[in-house]
Image (tube, rainbow, N blue to C red):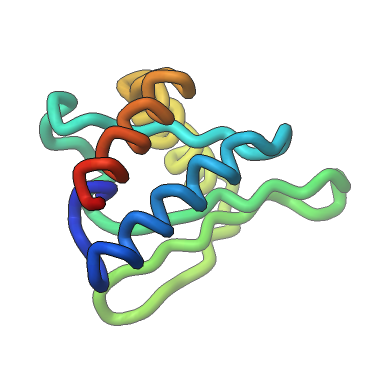
Length: 110
């Protein structure tokens, strides 16, 4: 979605530059799934896999959809989304290529 402009050009450029800055942090990994990857299951909507360090706190998936959102706690549901993320990550550009693309798009919007 880095090419879909939200707000004015300056806002878009600032958001892309912010992503580039965040990518410098050790605990953040930003990758971009290019258009050339074609249709994929991630297009269905936004979701987050929430992982916790304590074994007593199981992983959870937060799914957003058109009419609301839901938390999925069943281990098989969580595993389905972990597999989805792994699949998308395998088709994404590497971190360096992703940052180069983000920088290129930021320059295009300038």
